[in-house]
Image 1 (cartoon, rainbow, N blue to C red):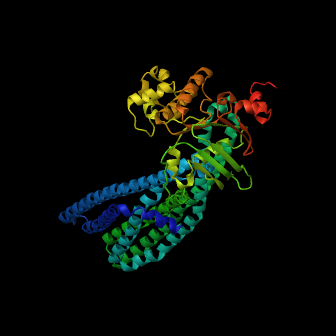
Image 2: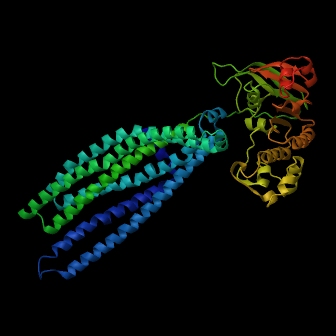
Length: 577
């Protein structure tokens, strides 16, 4: 087992130690009263001497003691469960809070490079298994160990020699459980990794179900799923087989112990060293003594899963966050003068993308960025927004390097509308006012500017209409209009429009363009577009290819050059000029 992982998990218990202490006290009380029951039973047996010699008064008294012990033990047991659950759910809540906070500070590169389904699995499934396995298992482990110690003490009190037989044979059970537990750990780690892969694939398939059906790809997807599922099955069979082997293995050893006690105890009764009642108590203890070993072996199996889950969760928590900056310079006057100087960036050091890029956007200018897929358009936007950091060069806003500003401040300078509209599960009103306090009048005014008001009021609940997950009950164009309305409400000093009107019909696009023209007045705007008809009025068009600006100028100027832009523009209409 990984001691560092266990220690780190137990450190989450510190704020809730009072629950742990009370749980251990209650557990001790429950064990004491449970262990007293066989003593009272043995004494009751000794009061039944023979026919006509039963001491009913003493027998009834012992029965009352047995009943009281059972009731008190059950009350303590209920308190242990309640306290341990309170501690467990508090700790798993803290783990989820930390993990969710970590997601918001992870570099975008990490999010892009990892399957979202796997990240989701760590947040939900893995932490659930940690709670069920390690944290709840801790109280079971204490209960089991305390029961073993208490049982040994009672057995030594009743008959020392027979008790020593039990003690001598006990290590066999522990050795068997430990060997099996060590072998199962690596299999549980492998199984969890495969579960994450399976979850990521299922999420991907559900998200793209329309495309899958459109291309008739169901059968191949099924084959791929079955291949991953088969690996999960094989790994699960191996881990569960070894995990399940611990219980019967220890049970065999425990049965040997019990049989030895029966034989030795019977001989001592015949020899007169023990009473029948004492033997009855001893056999109850011997049977009770073996149960904690079975429980502990089960706890060890759960611990393997919990530790494997904790390793995955802590690996994510230990992933370096975006570095925090002490520099928090701000702009005295937001003019929107953007300068990109000698910029270089690549996702893979062996595959250069943007090299020695120089761009200047003067205040109030509209800069359009065009080029074939993969040329670096979206990458440039990510660098402007500080989603990624350049390897060389710098980006200046009004003469100040954005590295000297906080990321939050830089991003607050831009209003961004993406090609892929993002909406959350909530009302239309809440989605438009996302991250912004606004009155109903301001929200409606923004929706009108975005030409979204008309379709909103036609909905049954208007602005209070509940949007389903990812906006599934709205068309793509309607979702895009709401995202545009969100930006209209914020009124940022600069704009980034990444295919902002790609999902809107031509008539609505014309209306939106008029609204954008109004909003873009006096604001520096960067537009990424594939439909070149939407950027003809741009003050400057940057034509990119392979991370380089190969042409630069206004629409008419670039057409007259009969270069790359000329070909790109007329290829949309299948016209050669």
